[in-house]
Image (cartoon, rainbow, N blue to C red; front, side, top):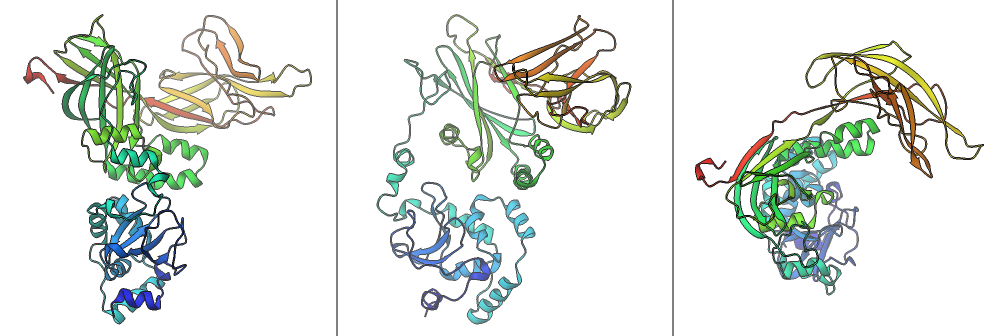
Length: 503
């Protein structure tokens, strides 16, 4: 008797590996016709089966998965299925490894050693059935997932009708068109641009960049840009981010978000035939398979059109440049300039007791020592609303100098707490010509910012306001946020009358 047949008859215990016996049939919409259920994980309806029309192959079924991938293979036979469980110690590897890198797989294995209960199961299979653990389960699982014909899955009637858009897209690929308005469809009678193959690649800002094509439209030029992010760095961020997002403090969440390698703040400008063209509109997305929050249909279409490996971690941007001439020119030369905006780095937090206090700090990027001197430190009261009985709210205004000087673009200081109502008071008149002014900006719901001016002098006086509070004389914890440009601008020649000049 084959091992699979013995399991179907006796249903020996696989609970040590995360698989419970459960029901022998499934009512899930994505369970294929002819499926024989092997067991259930107890999470999100995930279960395992063999399909009568597809031989001995063992499949995982994920009701929460994507269209066309709700069912996917994990083992060529039931024997291999058990050998994979022996090698991994838990079924979670089998239904997730296809979306992981080798590094992430190894890290998960290091953090989740095989349990004592699974160890007993492994010894049982080794002694009772002479099975040995699969030598390289990761490569096995990736190969079977990527090499399978998913059109052979016999889904139940009505499955494809549940996903009409996805089903249509799978059968009838869209005609590729790019418009100056940047969307997947033109606006009004807008015509698609003429594609100009570029095929340029280069390294900048820690990423490999690829510019496959430009598009000459009636109103201007459109470019598609892709940046490939290092997978290992991104996975390390995601693994920590998942924990911080759930358990971290607001400060930890905000600081960690600033480290996201899938976020890049940059500007693009172009020069056509020697004439500068400023960036017009732009759109984009990040693409990380298995993390739906980072995916977008238009980006996926672009990746497929250009034949880019969809397993890569990608930043995609589509940008437009209005023509600098009255008529659309014949493009003889095209140069692109990439400019990285200053990045945010969180520095020290501090509290202030009053005027005259000095705070010495070290710039986390340059390593230089600076001194913050508090000029004035005052509490203010506001009446929130027009009624005479309206409750007051309070905020603290701090005026200060810096030595050596740092501009407001280089250093931002903010209150770590949120306002109890409305917005966050924001002074924007520090260093103005008038001695002192307070303006309330807002609408019917009350002020959203308090703008404070300070007497002009040397050194420059900076000003900042705390959040709005319900009580006076509250100790404020201030946060320093530094912004410095860490990447040099890059000029790339994409089209040149002289081929030797092209980058």
